[in-house]
Length: 96
Image (cartoon, rainbow, N blue to C red; front, side):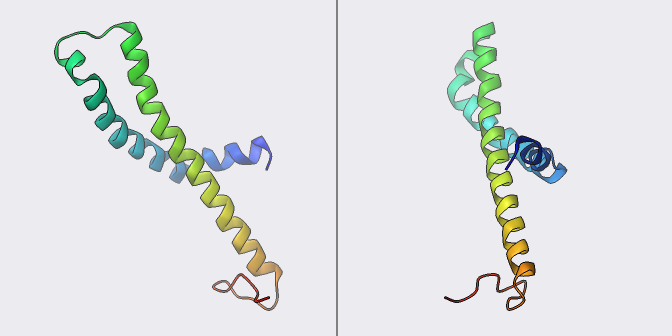
């Protein structure tokens, strides 16, 4: 898969929406666990803010990569079902 088609799937509105929600939930929990005391005591430095940014970026990235992989699988399964006259949409794999 080339970069352009990967980015098209990664920037699909459903993919972005899912990644944002995942990042918000998981990132907030991780920030509270890892940086909560520093936030409450006012110890936010530039370095810590960068770490917090990364804490939100990681679940966003994982969710995006996972969604793109799933969309590619679904696309491949649909193509296989259409390409084979013996199979239907719900039976995309021919018995061997």
